[in-house]
Amino acid sequence: MSGLQVPCPKCDSLLKLPGREYLGRKGKCPHCGHRFLLTDPDEAVPLELVSPPEIRTGTSARWVPDSPAASQPGPAATGMPAAAAEATAAAGSPFDFSPPADSSAGAPLVTAPSDVPVSQRFRRRKPRKGLFLMGGGVAIVVGIIIGVVLVSQNQTQTTTDTGNATQRNEAWEQEKQDQADSNEAAVELSPTKGSRIPLDYIPFTPHVVAHLRPAELWQSKPKYQKFMATLAQLGVWLNEQIPALTHFDPQEIEELTLAVNFGSRSSEPEVAAVVRLTKEYTQSDLNARFRGGMRPEFDDVAIFECVEENRCFLQIDRQTFAVASSLVAEELAGAAKFPEPPDPEMEPLLRESDRTRLCTLVFDMKTVDTHRQFVFIEPMQKLVDEFIIWMGDDIEVVSWSIHLEPNLFMETLLRQSNDASAMKVERAFQLQMQRLPERLVHMTGYMKPETVGRYQLISRFPAMMKAVDAGTSYHMGPGFVRLVTILPPHAATALAAASVYSWDQSVVTDFNVDRPSTTSVASIPDRIEDRLKLPVFVDFRNTPLNESLEYISDVIKTPIELDGDGLKQAAFTQVMPQTYNLGNVPALVAIDTILKKYAAERDPMVMVLAADSDRILITVKSKATDQGLPVYDTSGRK
Image (cartoon, rainbow, N blue to C red; front, side):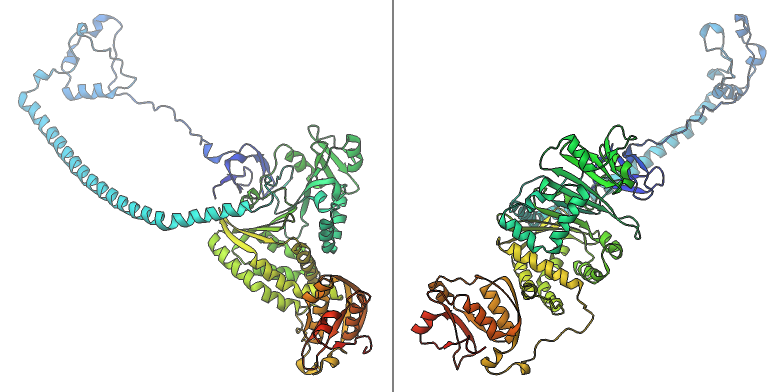
């Protein structure tokens, strides 16, 4: 990518700029912290010291009288040798006071050419004529040789360029055009068409950027409420941290831009936020929310300091403000006029961002890897290490965004490092996504969730990621790889819950112990009636009917088939919610509890267990009677 490097006038460190549009702004050195005006280093003209003119020393100085008669030649002048006269005329020094030549002044001081013999004059001219002829001949020969060489090189270069141009037009140029067309088609798939995420009023260059639309995420629509509920502890944490940082509830904030800057490895990261409210507030209301007075030293901007929380608020208008630590109050005030430039490596992905999407996360992989020991808690270190290793060394910056309407839309942008190409990153990441479900199966085998609902979601998480891989398309952008994932609307809730539950469970799971083995085949009874006596832990919370039976089937290692056509005949569905907290009970008790819920219906559900069958069938009573299937009495055999 094209960029500029501006040296710091204090420590000579180079500050990378993404483009010339940042020239003229005020920047901050990433090494020494010195703030200076960003100028083009190529426009600087080095100072050159001009030496005074050299004073030439005169030779053969003569005294000239003031009277005109003194200009007449004397005997000494007449008898001057020709060589001395030529030396005197050639000196040209400021000490030569001889008057200019004039015909009325008398005869010249040098000997006339007519006084020199003719043979002597011819002897002097012959060497000069031969030297000029020799130099001219050499110059002509050298010019001819250089011309032949240049013409030959031009012909060779023209032939090479013509061959290369033909090759690019037939193969490479067509491939580049196909990649550009594919990327443009992927951009059109986006359900939002907003502008890029702004980084105005951020007092530092961020390494992590998170952009949220809290008012939309916390709206009263059931779809969004269910999505936020599935985030579990993450949703609760956001609901607590946003008011603590901004002094406004999520429903009052239209856009929230969070920025994190990592300093030295042992120091805490700096956090800042830019808040854009859903409406304008009165100045008195804003003063009450900021909980502090104005800093008098900043007379050109409005800086409010909350001493109790050690935070400063930069008010832009009655609907926009920025908040950061009081330690960076000066930088926060300067950002009102001269915002800090973004990281040159993050700029291409920020340029592709969309501020109208519900959530966007952009981060620098190498910076997160460097500071992971001081940012993440100890139980998460193992999982973070696994994630960084899984991403690989070829990916430098990652951007991930999500939107829920009309379908589940996710976009992932991967910017390659200087040692890799976008095509290499695309192929490697596509292979990693194909292998991810198998790796998740291995990891979830160590997890022991407390509830059945979480167990079901965590166990289905590998299959969900396989569906994500199937619904993802890969495209080549200008300097990055674009991944677009589109899934049905209902997939958002299940995928969010499975991801969060798996993440939470991984924190408390010890992956260093031996993986717990599943129930061996020898411990499973041969008869289905005996398998129905095996214990099952039941804690269903709005779990669909088909998923509840799948869980029981997995525990007792016996297929349970749900007759969909029979259920439709009695106006039943396979996704009817089941909510029971029975604890450890026999599998037959769990099935009987489910069937009892619909026993009073016109055509109740029953369980069919044939003597020669190796499966359990759940259907309706009328269909079992018509087909002559034996109905198993679940209530009398508990």
